[in-house]
Image (cartoon, rainbow, N blue to C red; front, side, top):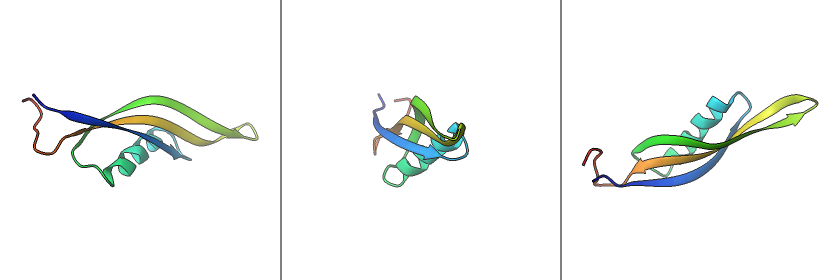
Length: 72
């Protein structure tokens, strides 16, 4: 059986929610290897002068524990 760990990451972008999600993966990959999936737990946006200025995600990043392989 494979074992995965999960880290929770907060990330943002001034472009889109998709870009914020990619930033979460990029941020996690600085300290974690073998990332397998991302789950967006929450999304929100900051508003200034009736315009969205920042997209934010709270994401859970799953990664394979060293020495494990997917599929058993």
